[in-house]
Length: 214
Image (cartoon, rainbow, N blue to C red; front, side, top):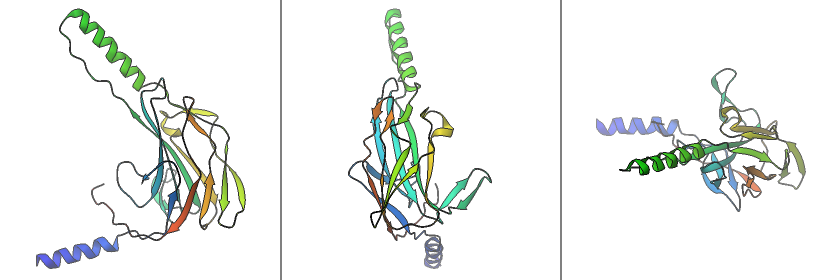
């Protein structure tokens, strides 16, 4: 009986698997990770980090991935999950602040010093992380060499602490496109540059078993 239940459960799990196709990002710089920072998934992204871009204390990460038509995505207008209708490039900025740590002291003088140190750490962790860009355009290079400039809908600069500015969506094509290369302008956080090299996206078929408890 147990074997039968396990077999049925496995079959249901497999039937719920995602099989792609997906866009796999290849680049000289950046770290290959899941596009979702809290749960593993089929969408792969390149992560680029800048540590302690003063006055902010911590790491600011630029997370870049691309997705094909048919990929599930959240639609804020209908507050529901829909299927993407175009090939998109998504750029997100995530913050990992250094949280202030409490200090211990015995004397009144030491307590005052440690309190000031704690307050300074707290202010640094809450300081602005201002994102800016050298150009509002990316360059899309097709598999047969055609180059096309695409404008990014991005303000001149913005604070990554602002929730509404954490994700930038760029439509690359009205439908599915074959393997392609994206050349990025320079992105900065508080004047320090993210080391983002050109990213080559290639279509791959893959099977991904979803994590149920995410």
